[in-house]
Image 1 (spheres, rainbow, N blue to C red):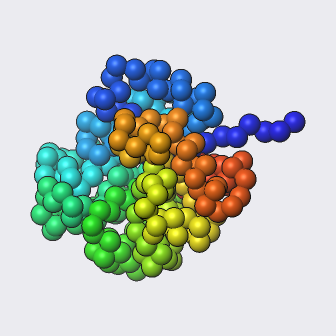
Image 2: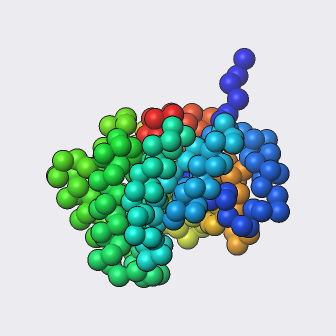
Length: 267
């Protein structure tokens, strides 16, 4: 008897207000599409609390908590203690999304870096992997992660894997640098876009045991739904494109991603 193909959405924001009218139906569509494991990602304290609430309500959802660089300027003085307390819940599987964002520049680079370093250290303290957000900041992201690797290996998670570069958008050189540090690379709807040549190149060449899939819902909806509200069911389209780029059967790709996600997040 052939095993049913299972898919994983390793990065979604289902607590977004854009899902308020039909959140339950969105989850039903995900299950119908074979998406049986989902990771809800926090980006500030309220969304991290909401992520944990979803994870405690639904067995198929796990939570990631942290302060994303675009929200560090809004964090209260006791933010680190709050993240630490949330992260110790058994349904929390990583610290994130954390990192640097030089595209929006909502906070000074030095402040973004301070939050990044503090959360890397927290991940090491709690032996959790990290989920990295890096936009227009690849050089500084690598600098910080390399320094962290040299200084007490501050981001080694529970499975000995440092974590995930979310919605990977770099070229092969950047991919190699991230892979050399032990990270997994997660592909979102952008891998389905016709002009995403660098992402296609990385998807073809990288090791199968380092690949993850995500939607980043409600953002980055894959082709042919580009520009629409994204949802977890569409992670199947991401997996289909990855399988096509690598010239391999979809069930084989999906099985590898399933195993990779369960390893890095310790679930």
